[in-house]
Amino acid sequence: MLLNLTLADFVLVERLGLDFHPGFSVLTGETGAGKSILLDALALVLGERADAAVVRAGAPRAEISAEFDLTDVPGLAAWLEEQDLAGDDNFLLLRRVVEAGGRSRAFINGRPATAQQLKAAGEFLVDIYGQHAHYSLLKAAEQRRLLDAYAGAMELAGRVAEAWRLWREARERRLSAEARGGELAAVREQLVQTVEELTALGFTPEGWQALQEDQRRLAHATELVQGAQFAADALEGDEAGLLTQLRGVRARLAALAEIDPALTAFLDTLEGASETLQDTARELRRYAERVELDPEALMLAEARLGAIQAAARKHHIRPDAIPEKLADAQSRLAELGDAADLEALARAEAVRETDYRHLAGQLGARRAQASQRLAQAVTEAMQQLAMKGGRFHVDLPACEPGGHGLEEVVFQVSPHAGQGLQALAKTASGGELSRLGLALQTVLSGVTGAATLIFDEVDAGIGGGVAEIVGRLLAEQGKRRQVLCVTHLPQVAARAAWHYRVSKADDAQGVRTRVDLLDETARTEEVSRMLGGVQITEATRRHAAEMLGTTSPRATEKARRKG
Image (cartoon, rainbow, N blue to C red; front, side, top):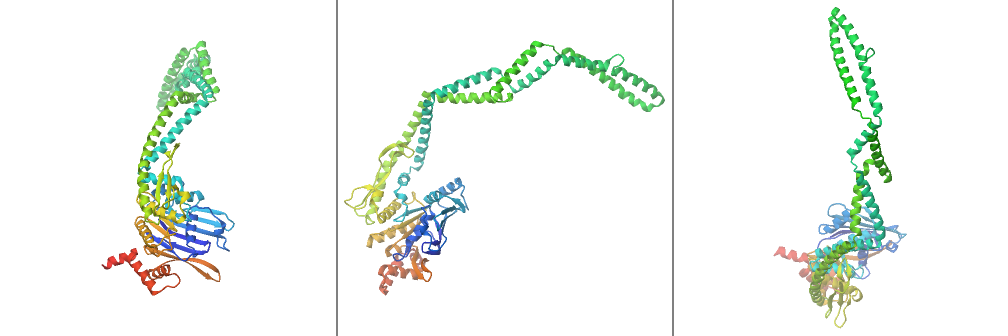
């Protein structure tokens, strides 16, 4: 719902801030007062193309901002999250700045945005019907959405779009495989060689570590034997060995310990060291005996080591990355095997096509049934809205398969008796389009539509009883959503819950447009003006008061409370 609209230096408006309310509101004023300025400003902040001409003469820039309550617009909240433009919970601020030089800037919740993003957000918020609108009702996508919503087929339409995407992807995979047949065969052959080569290595991280250790040991076997024997001899030699010298040291200390018993503890330490060295010398000799001098085993180890290193160099990886390389080649080979199997790809495509056509057929049947009901209901509503003898029709011409199904949705209208049916965009005038939009909203009430509806020139070419019907229908819409209407008809204005008067003020600084929310007294005067023109008599005032007293929602509520 639109909460407020703020304008600064826009056309004839210097500064203006308007708060709006739920329900049905009207904007009235004399011709040329500037009622369309407000709609132009709203259209601009909703993404319409900017023009430097909207900047008030002498001002550096024009600024327009609009704040909305998103309570009843859950889809927009999700869209804002996707675009990283979310603001405070349940509120949205749109802002547009147009420089005098023509440059335009857009903001959503204080963050820079594009005009296209403003327009995308606006499509969730407001539907505008009238001469100054960028008619969403004339767009094929909107007509299709309205019919699907009326048919209760929005979820099915989403499934059709998804089925179309899957069919298209399956077809592209098949066509790609056909076009790249020779190339895929060469790639497959190379992958097969890679898998066979790396599998033959039998490589494991544990085996690789053991192989390196074995190769080092075999390559240095002689050195290891000689070193172990040398160490054993150094420990246990005849006269120069450490054990012989250690025994001499112990014997000397033993003699001294008889003089001073304090040295006895050192004797125990030397005894333990002597036993440890004896065990060490014994183990070193056993190690030297176990070391193999096996040239053949060394040759085999070095050959395997070389094969692994050569494979790693060939594929530009480290040896320990061979298992990962093998798994990747096996995975790609499996995928390529599927991609190269044209028969399998063709079967998969056929399955996707069958799924799509089945769902699209269901959607088409739902649309065909709903189109007849919708056409009849809107045709009946048109008879009440100065379109006597007019007809509304929904055409469903077959089309090539696509994300929206197997048929187009085209709204056609014959505004009056004797006129043939034509596409909506080619037939309806501004006023007729507004009334047709009202008829559609009446029929679709509670099914679809934006939270805010704006009607401009809905009263063009009508009067009397038809005007009363238009006012009643707009008031009924106002019970379910926010409705704003620019009108010249007192019968329509009297039905509103809120009444804004647009007027011009001419002073030394130039012409300015102002907008006032009218109280009951001022509202009676404005409806009197709409009834009687320039000369307002007591009779017209009584007539205006009578109209407001019997049709105004506020007057009706006041009477109910008195009762």
